[in-house]
Image 1 (cartoon, rainbow, N blue to C red):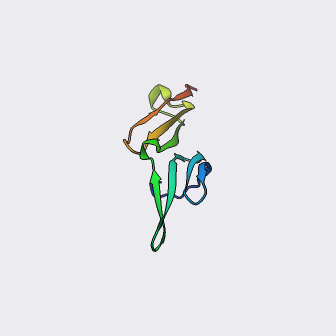
Image 2 (image 1 turned 120 degrees about the vertical axis):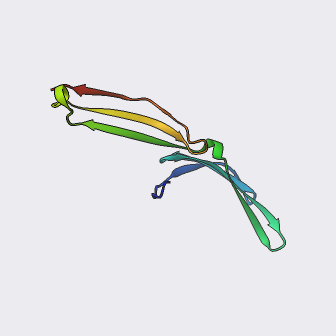
Image 3 (image 1 turned 90 degrees about the vertical axis):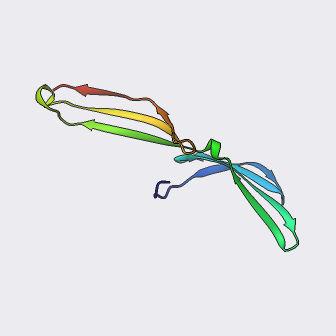
Length: 104
């Protein structure tokens, strides 16, 4: 994702021997549901992979460490943490933030 390698763990959610299987991720930065269907053709077997892009999201966390400021905030310290979810189809994000800043 975004030029970086990552690992996904998942589980098989449906299985029909020699016909199809479906899987979904259970951990990792991206949630994916996918299906691989098999069908016989004269040359052998055709496999069709379907990924449901409306279910593709990525979790993220943004952390801001405060280590000072200007004027009366010169000795400020603290941290703000903002976890959220990025929808890779629409580009929209949602999340929350919380933190504490000490004025020194």
